[in-house]
Image 1 (cartoon, rainbow, N blue to C red):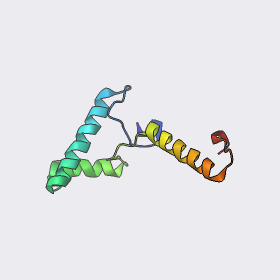
Image 2: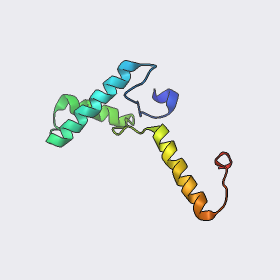
Image 3: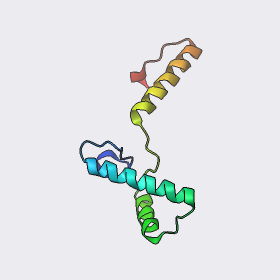
Image 4: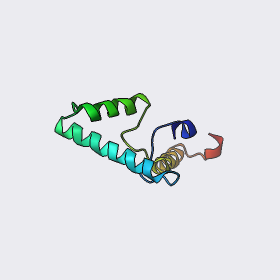
Amino acid sequence: FKSEFGHCNIPYIYSADPSLGKWCNAMRCVNNEMKKLGRRKNKFFHDRIECLEEIGFQWEVIDHDNALARRSLDLDAFKGELGKSISMMGI
């Protein structure tokens, strides 16, 4: 995944490999629970978490579609403040 997309932000629903998305979600849930309970000392999960962090695994899923939509709204607001038209393709 990382070699293809350049990041480790594997979504829960990943059609090319559904089991990878589900596994990553499970790891995120385990990590969150361990943080809440203060139990990152579990050797098995601690080692697994360390390995994932070493490759740049992202614990918070970034929804790139929503991020683009939010930034587009920011751009529209910016254009409104300037009173000018800015082409998104020209940026």
